[in-house]
Length: 174
Image 1 (tube, rainbow, N blue to C red):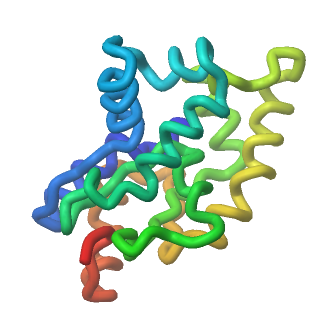
Image 2 (cartoon, rainbow, N blue to C red; image 1 turned 120 degrees about the vertical axis):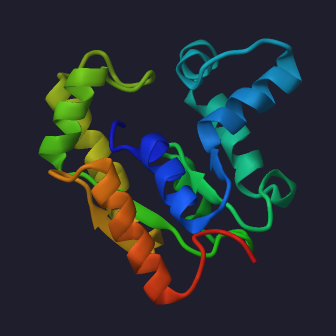
């Protein structure tokens, strides 16, 4: 949480001249289509549980019709974990925006813990659990790792753009 995925994606997409999508928005839209109510990801997790939210995410993660042929996708933090056993054919590049454990703790202190975190644990314990659970998987899944701490969104968008140009591929697409 709070690494800058949602804010950074449109900046990189603009440089790449691609549309940008946000998977949390896609989950909100899918929820609205299914239940007729506009609800935030936080609301969905709090009222229906992480498994319910994860099920909505997973349906989107492998739905080729959701994503245009070429686009940049800002994923929710757990979204790429649906790809641990194999990516859909439309996901060409996965970029890991790396935040240190200390940075994650600062972000969670500023934004609050995730909706489904164990309220019996301290914020530090929650951050540590989340970091241990996801960091290795993110490294495994990513094609590009970018350390975000101490950098502006504009600087990060330029770094990512240049690295993707050097690879001569778009982040997502055919």
